[in-house]
Image 1 (cartoon, rainbow, N blue to C red):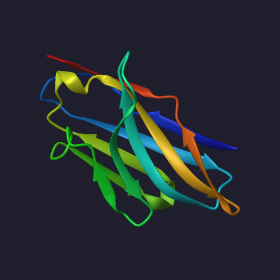
Image 2 (cartoon, rainbow, N blue to C red; image 1 turned 60 degrees about the vertical axis):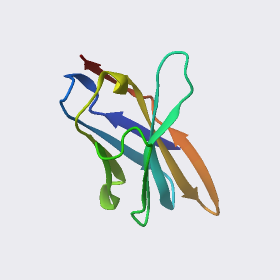
Image 3 (cartoon, rainbow, N blue to C red; image 1 turned 135 degrees about the horizontal axis):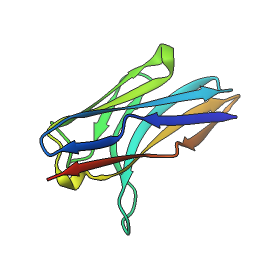
Length: 119
């Protein structure tokens, strides 16, 4: 059983900042990568940022230079620092953890956390 829990969402004014956290726990050998996605009603879930166990990062074009992803391997936790927030960043943010269990890799999603940016 693997649990992925996000926290840190909320309401912020445009230009403000928020930091999201995502913690993975349970029975797995290791975490391969953890990614942040976001989704708004009627749209597909889109990648915001991701980080591998080795620290390699990736970002969606629309957040480059504003968002920073980092991880604490000891805590199995990833963070998403969001600066210069815009109204269009309003969405439910989901964390995905790709973990290794025995010899196979599995993907688990969190329940999501709402981020609302007021203009």
